[in-house]
Structure formats: structure tokens, C-alpha cells
Image (cartoon, rainbow, N blue to C red; front, side, top):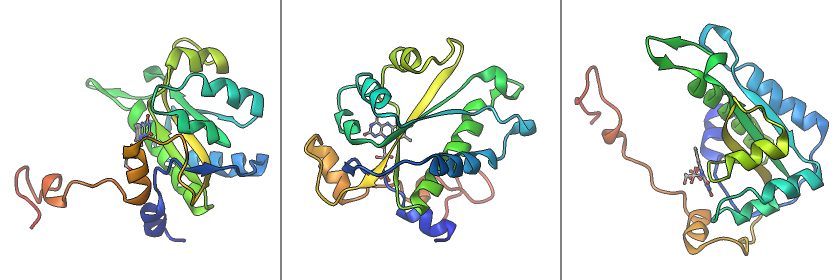
Length: 188
Ligand SMILES: Cc1cc2nc3c(=O)[nH]c(=O)nc-3n(C[C@H](O)[C@H](O)[C@H](O)COP(=O)(O)O)c2cc1C
């Protein structure tokens, strides 16, 4: 699979079935994050790969309403960082950007391996930190929900979520976010 195929194939599916998680898989995904670019090579990202069944079960309790589908995850990757781990250049903080890029690399590699890697923001951050022992000063930026895509629509999905299993949520046309040679000059 080439990069373009992985970009196209990646989807935030919510109908998941179990998949075996091995240490080799964790290592493979971690190595993909390791090679991401970062400001001054600061590598501000931190990941906890959670796949022990009892730990997973506890994290499920920290989900927001609307994310009950997460209960079918085989692994949850907690992604966290802190602004002091990366550049701040004239008020521009780079830790979220760099951690996001590393996370995207993990997600694309997971896609290539035939997995769903679905980032979410709907969780109780304090509870996640407590369960995983993440230091107070860290920000839990996302949880990436990993599993195998199930062709059977998950019973825990809302009507809207069922819809986005079938059809990829609509994107802005290029004309709304791409400019040529200066702001306002749209791509035609
Ligand atoms: C930062 C972020 C937060 C998200 N939070 C949630 C969430 O809490 N629950 C959920 O079901 N999906 C969540 N998503 C997934 C998006 O809804 C999904 O990526 C978007 O609808 C586009 O669908 P696609 O990724 O399949 O193309 C999140 C995605 C991102 C990047």
C-alpha cells in the first residue's frame, strides 16, 4: 500500500471487532511515530499503548456519552504531551502540531496493517490520567481507538454514527481551504 492509498483507506470507523494485539505491533506503530518530524527534533509526543483487558475495561469508564462504541476496542493509544517539551517560537506553540503529526503516522501505519485507528477527543481527561498514571502537567491530546473494522454495524452506534460508517463524512471543497499564491485567490 502506498501513502496515498493509506490516506484514502483510513476511516474513523466505529464498528469494531476484536483483533490480537502483539508487542511486535506496538513496536511497529511506535517506530512510525519515532520517525515523525518535530521542531528542533524535540519529539514531544508520549504514547501509552493500552491492551491489557482489565486496563482497557477501566478506560471504557472514562468515555463521554456518544463514545460507548469504544467498548469494542482491542487497544487504546493514549497520546499526551506538554508544551514545555517542544518549541515555542514567538508565541507559536508546536507541541500539539508535532504530536499530531506523529499520531497521524501511527494511524496511517495502522491503516496499512489493516486496522482501524480512530482518534477521539470525547473522554474525561482527569479520569484517563488517573487510570494510566499520566503526570498532572501532561495534556492528554487524544485517545486512538484501535480495532478491526467489522462489516456488521455496531449495536452501540447512534443514527448519525451509523450513517458515517456507510459514507465518509463530507469534506470542504478544495476551493474553501486552498489558496494560490496569496490569501483569497482560490484554486479553480
Ligand atoms: C481531534 C479529533 C477528535 C475526534 N473525536 C471523536 C469522538 O470523540 N468520537 C468519535 O466518534 N469520533 C471522533 N473523531 C472522529 C471524527 O468524527 C472523524 O474523523 C470525522 O468525522 C471524519 O471521518 P473520517 O475520519 O472517517 O473521514 C475525532 C477526530 C479527531 C481528529
